[in-house]
Length: 176
Image 1 (spheres, rainbow, N blue to C red):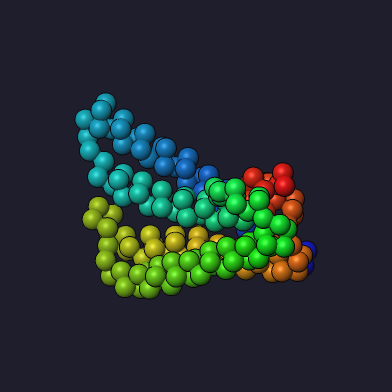
Image 2 (cartoon, rainbow, N blue to C red):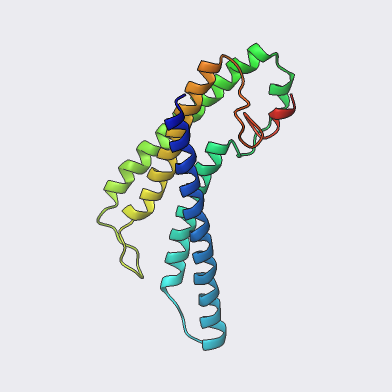
């Protein structure tokens, strides 16, 4: 695949990681403040639960996409390791296509829910639920793009990849 696409993928993944990390730090501060306010100041912070849930959703969606780019999700590869290179290649294509199908279904559902829930707002902050579904649209949409690029690389290579990412194809496949 072209150097431009590879570089764009890497940069997008790093941006997703950075945003997810910032959201994690913000989540810790929000929840910490909520606990401090409730236990020490004896006041309730009704917005903290909504902010925490929203941050968590965005953080997980973006972090999952960045991990998908790195092939960092957990994979049980016992069977794959025992396959010949040719059969493994076919299995990897099938796995990528099945993953892509799942991502497209999740994306379509999230995109639809984003519009259906546009007029529904959270209780404490009055924020549209569309912003929460947008997290899935961005995260899963990124996973779709990463998957398509990976599928093209797989097909061009004509076999399993070791493209320099953490662990190559999947985290534990690099040893075979």
